[in-house]
Amino acid sequence: MSKIAFFVLAFLSIFSAMMVVFSRKPVHSVLSLIFCFFTIAGHYILLNAQFLAAVHVIVYAGAIMVLFLFVIMLLNLNAESEPHKTSAGKIAAVVSGGLLLLVLVSVLKSTDGLHLSSAPDSQVGMVKNLGMVLYDKYMLPFEVSALLFLTAMIGATMIGKKELD
Amino acid sequence: METADLIFKIVFVLGVFGVSLVIAMYSTYAERKVAAFFQDRIGPNRAGPFGLLQPLADGVKMFMKEEIIPTHADKALFILGPSIAMLTACMTSVVIPWGSSLIINGKEFVMQITDVNIGILYVFGVVSIGVYGIMIGGWASNNKFSLLGALRASSQMISYELAMGMSIIALVMMTGTLSIREIVESQPGAHWNVFVQPLGFLLFLICAFAETNRTPFDLPECETELVGGYHTEYSSMKLGFYLFAEYINMFISSAIIVCLYFGGYNFPFLNSLGLSHNATAILGTVLMFGKIFFFIFFFMWVRWTIPRFRYDQLMRLGWKILIPLAVLNIVITAVVLLFKYDLWNTSIN
Image (cartoon, rainbow over all chains, first blue to last red; front, side, top):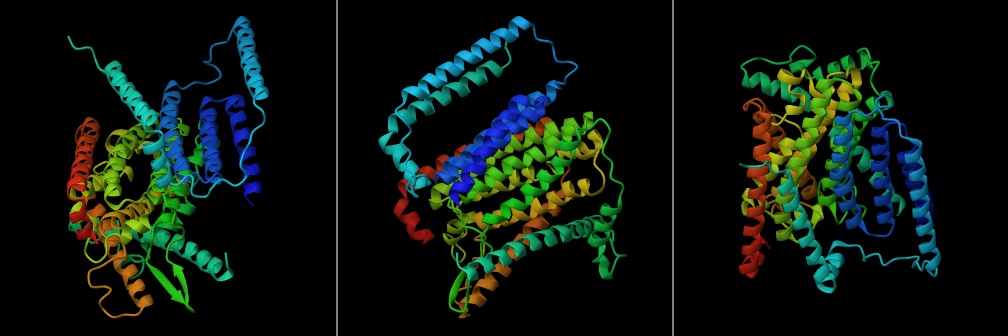
């Protein structure tokens, strides 16, 4: 049952990820990306990480992608107004993409196989256990990342603020 | 899952779906009657006795109207918009506990479609997707008024989602759970959360108005400035979906307010009446619906009493008043919980 669900979800996430790249209209790309995030949330649920799935949907699909869509809708991109890219740019894109692929493949090669436990503990992703781990075992990294967010927030406010003179 | 469980679930799912549609349908009628009462008119009274068949007549009218898709619209997204609005409106009712439990043939059936242990987060997830219905519809119409309405809707919903989430945090800190059923069960009798979280309730209520795009927060469809806002180009049942989704959202947010702050299916002295388990459960559900109807009426009451905000007032209220108040509420709750933990514990139990 969960195996079928996994394959359906995996197919949908790869398909929607490809649609992000291949669709002609920018808004369709963004919507495919949102759909891709949903399928990834589905994968989290299959791994018993309900909390992570909900937060993933709220943060990525619900907030960040809304801003993406916002910007792209306002830019009103379409095929006619799109600037034509020079062939030098295209070649550079192909080369850098190829290099990234090379790095990814070499990293995958160097790992000695993925050891996935087929049946993760059903309680592992519950809010309670997650909180216990975060506030106990990984207290320092957790607090440091919270500080990082605070810094980012202050930075964004500073940049967004109008110059006062 | 056993067959009995499965049958009960299927019947219950269909029941919840049907009930929310019927309530949304009659909310449109109630809204017009309430508006008429507030404006000293009679309201719809032609279709059937007291105009009770008016929603059916409206529905038929909606279906019969000509379906127009603008030539410059993105056709697929134009259809997707209202579908998402309707889908997300119907999805939230899954985690709401509509009653305690029924015992049929010695077997206990919980009156809830599913008790997810992150119920509140699920609700927030669905609410945060809800904005796409309006955004996609508004953009796909290829009309500047629609686009402006969509932008207003999305910035408004994102802003008020923050304050809403933070008002819930204080509640979650008190009850120690994200499951809506457990939150309801933590307020037996008249120990409703509204008495210990009055500020949180007020914040949540205001944000619920903003999330459902109801007056005074109905700027996305502000007819005096934007023709019809995001649904300017919509006609026929697609427009009907948008309007209908708003009424379903109103019903569901009332249900969530009742569950979180007004004890859900709990009522004082309900368990001391000496009724059987099933009768108590059904009476609890009836009382819960009574509370829900009060809040639906409250939504309408506010709509026909208060004029809408200006856009800058809306943003100032959201970011400069509600969010700081929500943070203050969290801090106060945390301090009280820290110092009076034992006392608190005995008072809510």
